[in-house]
Image 1 (tube, rainbow, N blue to C red):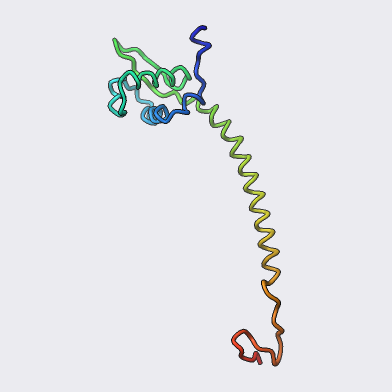
Image 2 (image 1 turned 180 degrees about the vertical axis):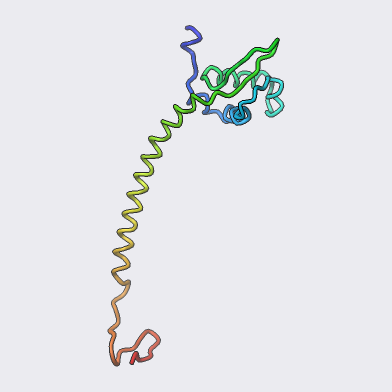
Amino acid sequence: MEAKEQRHDVFQAVADPTRRELLRLLRSGEELPLKGITPHFSMTRAAVSKHLHILSDAGLLHERRVGRETRYRMNPDPLLELRRWLAFFERYWDNKLGMLKMIAETEHGAAVGKPDRPAAPVGPGSADRTGQGMD
């Protein structure tokens, strides 16, 4: 299998909390070398490097060689795929919540129109709830 066929997709890449934290760290667009990234994580340099490789393989990072070190910078473009996918579900839930709101308002409106208990007679000589006459 060629490296192109083993490419990670954006969803797999951001599924891991460590990789999401790496993206947050690199979100400014500033290039950082591995030695500048590793101190932010409680794991080995090799583990951080593996996470960076997965993000890079998904297209979420740009890599640039400077001498013997590789510098990493975030590429936010592939996140648009995630945004489009999430937008579908946002519309879905907006629709469902809108329907729920409409049902709740309809039922609340019907309940407001119907008293909980039978209405007491109102008029001269009738007593209000305090027992006092209303006239």
